[in-house]
Each structure stands twice: as structure tokens, then as C-alpha cells.
Length: 298
Image (cartoon, rainbow, N blue to C red; front, side):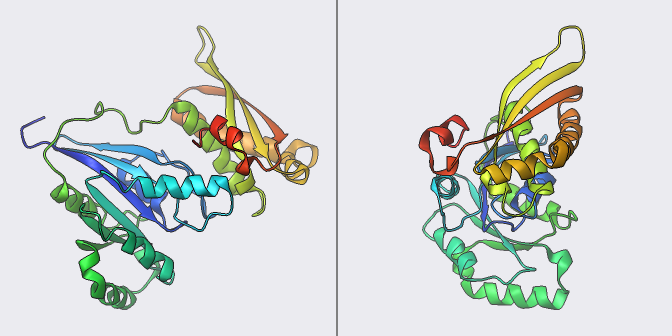
């Protein structure tokens, strides 16, 4: 690493479902955060690390900023707003395929008094015409005192990602290597494993169930002299009816969740996995401080 090596922390914020996690995974080149078409998928602020010979960028993926309806929601919004403090660059992601509304502009406005550079990223440009994009950029340019630059991208297609990285590097200071260059996240493997299970619940069950679920890895042990990891996980839900949906008729849904999650976990850990899932009802866990703390939402 030479004398001109740059490094720093970059927070990515925006409304739920604007594509922050897809962008993070695209930037880092690994499946670090879970992705779902359902809003409020990300619950914790997760640090993901991009390193080259010239730069190390520590991205902070945050929960979508929304109006909370329970203590878990309050934790998520607080986690996102706290991440604005003390970072080198703030990236505000807007979904330009959706109408850019009051909530988006409130998030942009929240960065107004922060001294760090602010980059406005217009995501999902693959879903709109060039004329529509030009019109959106013209509308947002009226507020140009709020941000330093506008970069249109498609996180899903990888379009203009290099431009975004160049803009980030331009705004970062000369600094140290904060993490070893082969690390792409600072969260434990256990956390990523639990999130991969939760991703499959989001993907496979109906709209009502997913936000009332949490996954706890109760055991994760490597077998001696064999390249196999035994994982036991408990899925918590809030209602008996939800437990029935997650288990499914003759256990079919739970089996499908397990099969799909295991494939991703084996990719992550690069070894064979024996995944055992249990489902428990814990009523109103999203409003219970001690349960939230036990599940890592502190």
C-alpha cells in the first residue's frame, strides 16, 4: 500500500426497497446482505468492505428509513440515522423507476447539515427511458445545494457502478487499511447464515409472515475430520397461524426453506452443511426489549 492509499467509511441510506442491499452486494462482489422484493428486509447496519491496491471503502448498509410501528422498527430507523455520524461520504439511494416523493426528499434533507460529501444515486435506470431519467435529474438539480453529485446507476445490471466507485474514491481521504484485504464483511458468519435462512422465508412465504420472523442460530459446529458443518436454527414467529404457514402441509414449506437456505450457506462456507430448522411462536417479539437484545437488535 503506497503513500496515496485512500480509505474511509461510506453510509448508504434510502427508503425501504430502493436497492441498497443489491448495490452493496454489487460493489463488494459477494452476497453479504440479503435481498428481497419486500420492503424493510435489512434490519441491522452491516459493514461491507471493498479493497483494491489503491483504496479500501467500508460501506455501511442500513435499514430503510420508514415510519416505525414497533420497537424493532424504531431500532431499524435509529440504526440508519446513527450511521450518518462520523462517516466520510453519504450515499443517498433513490428509486428512479418509482415516484420520487416527500419521504425521499426528507432523507436528502436529513443530510443537509452534515459536513460529509453527499452523493445522490438514482438506481434502477434500466427500468426507465433516457428522457425520463433526464427529466428526474433536471428536477433534482433544483436542490443541488443538498448534495455534491448525482450518479444514475443500475445496481441489478451493474451499470455505472465504476463511475460511482470513482466518485467515492475522489471524496475519500488518504488513510490506513482498516481491515485485512481478504475480508468483505465484519459481521460473524453466524449472522450471515441466519440472514440467508430469513431471506428464504421472505422469498417463499406470504406477505403477512416475513416481518414477524427472526432466525437464531443456536448451534454451529464443524465435524471433526469431515468437511461438514452441523447448523441448528430456530425460526421465531409471532402467531400460531404463522407457524403453520412456515412449516406448511406435512412440513413441505419448512423443508423447501431449508433446502434453498442450505445451498446458499454451502456456497458461503464452502463445505457440506447439515441444516436443522425449528419453528417457535414468540408473541409480539418485535416489541419485547429482551428478545430484541437476544436476537442482536440492540
